[in-house]
Image 1: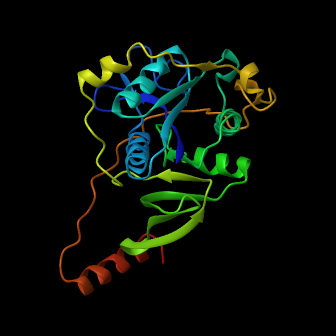
Image 2: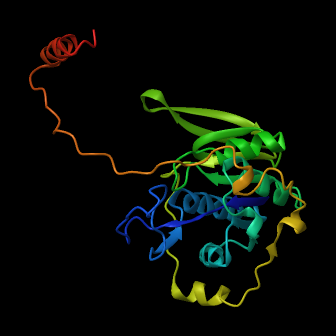
Length: 262
């Protein structure tokens, strides 16, 4: 099975103290420590496990600058077979649709049975997987926490739904899946693995290489723009209601009535 996993280089929340930039519309990223997006890391681990079981190869791809190559090498050290960097000044400032369009162009250059993304990345929109599937006209499932590879024509996909219940679906291949954290336990990447891929050549594909539509990429063509970015003011502490379930319900109803909520 040929699997493509879309990954992203993001600020490491465990290693950074975040501050806003002077414009107030983004984080100050100059001195941040970056790593692979957590959700994407689970997607790569799942892809590797599938290939270990049924055969094939795993390719990781990212849209970014030269520094994003470190994310690809990290995932290759983890066990991915190939990496592809999509990099061009024209990509800078692209919104979700633009990023999905760039990835679509790369997907169409290959022949993949399964395309995986993380359920979301640092900006929390959770939109790339769905957009990519729609652009490719492929089946799609989000928040996937279980994959059973079958006969090479379909996969069984599990999703946690409301109430903690598990939903299982059979999806035709090729398809796009957005992976939820907890689907597996990503393996440790040792120094030996990092050294092994340190000198591997990673192809870089530009806008011209991909033939991507220039009218949908870049800052000027973005339909969604961030206009503000702020840390919300801290409010008062929460009030904990005590008593039996019935007493708590009665107290909550009275509070909602007093606040005009009922």
